[in-house]
Image (tube, rainbow, N blue to C red):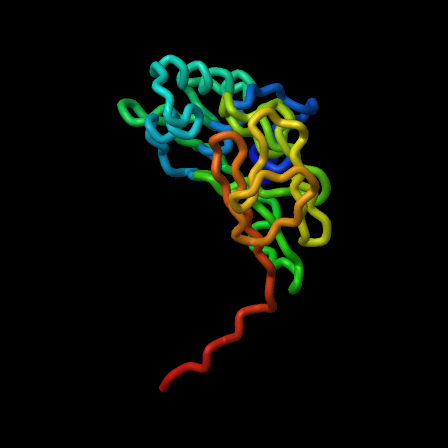
Length: 217
């Protein structure tokens, strides 16, 4: 997802938030939280859902999420009392309350083009070229799991086709149940396991415009 709001651009593909003065520094969890709020805007997101997304299968105190929200507000120059972007919903959670617009919204992809993404409770689009998977901060696919190496694997996308390669990870990379030791082609629906994280590789191909159904009299 690539969304614009005020002087900012949020890009989940490059994992970057940019402002008028250039890149804004955000921790991986703050970046993920901002993305979750943008995806659900203008709906309010329950605290429990945000905690499950940021700290899956891990108990954390409410103060942990409050610190993440405070980090986002600091990066955006937002004020909790007079919010422009992040609204606190008392006793419930948080919501993105600013006006945001996704790049390419309402545009039709050219027929025959393909888009690739990974799904595992969230959806991360893969960009053309190299996509690093792991716990390093600049990973295109950032995975918060102690069983995943910092630079665990990479997926290279070229012309709608993708290959995955393990980068010497400790716990290995598995495709459809088999541990890989060389670059391996991916097909839509392939299951990928990194450490204890199971994800699915998806390919979506744009077709021509929808045909108009004849009216019934």
